Length: 369
Image 1 (spheres, rainbow, N blue to C red):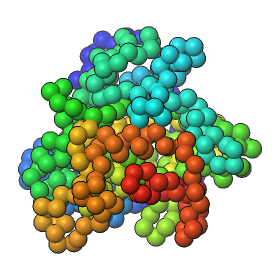
Image 2: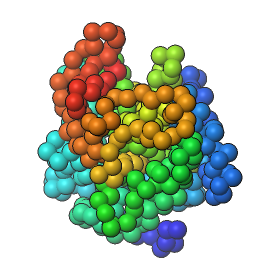
Image 3: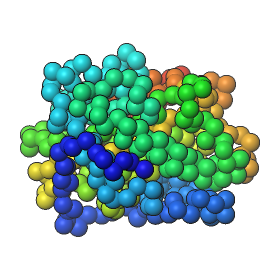
Image 4: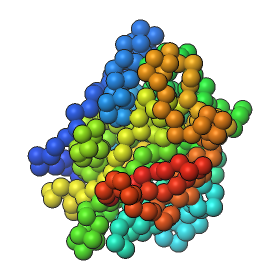
């Protein structure tokens, strides 16, 4: 647990919840406190498997950090944006197009959205081993707290979910855990923590971009953990092809599968399209600060379906690659990272409002306007 003696930093005050009546997605709520026993994990596996088939998203509660602890993490999350000068930020910019890694800052106006409009989103990313590289001076006294937080998220949240997902495929419950190691005794990949701040945009940019802040997309990793925050902006594309808002649940997690998990699960656990749009009117004056944990399989893991799964043998496997040509986790991550928001997108000839980019071996990645 984090120390009771914290270095003093400014307190971040989140926005109040919206009072507007929004059309929310009805997502299941999973109680992670039940995942401490095999019996509990087997029970949860049935519900999580159905959630992944139906939605690709679910909420998780009782994740092990109290509201007071998460308030402290939120205070820390704002430090890279408010306590670091622009000159110092330049020293820690991520060279994503070259390295295929997000570690460091992504500046505002890096991603193209639409009609000449670029994003107003700043983020700071760090490897799950926060000591792997240098950080701005304001973050250095906070690294021990951040390391405790990433280790907790990895071991007590992600690993629990990975065991549940494995049981849902009826394979040994350590199958996915063994692909997401924590220790440094092998290549452990690019699982990373992201602090992300969305700033309000001009009305002109909102009109030109159709109020879209991030186009509809899938994540490229296995499991994404989003610590729920009050500014409404995240939407998912449901199976009936309508966009539904995700509701804020205090101190809950929002969990979704990414491309890599869809590949490994033979399409059963689907990577759901999601986007970020302009918040409702009563929240538009606020910035939106988010905490994300993007889980990626270890770099050398081949993203081929688990054909030994009895479930997949019964329902069939949906492939995006031939098994022999399936990329490693590192290959897929580098290709998606380098291309995102920077590549030339082509209008789909068959789907209205969809743009496409080709990543590896002719695999098409879709972006929804």
